[in-house]
Length: 62
Image (tube, rainbow, N blue to C red; front, side, top):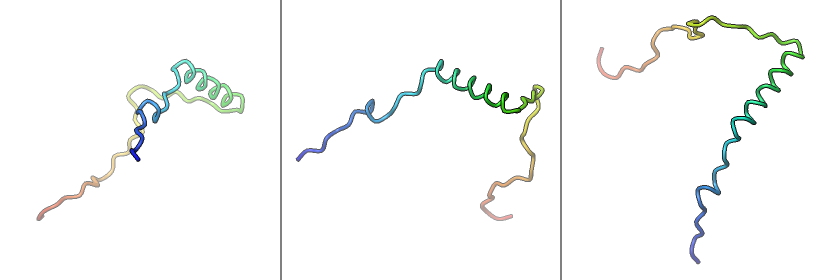
């Protein structure tokens, strides 16, 4: 008995169109605001990155 091959197009689902994604985000934001949430505007150039000591592994002698 030969193995059946499945086409790649049948294995992967397509992403929803951008319009559907946009509307779902808009609905989520509206629900968030109605529930009392607030949107905070962050100025350009501000990052949430925290600078900490390097966590890289060094191989070899010191």
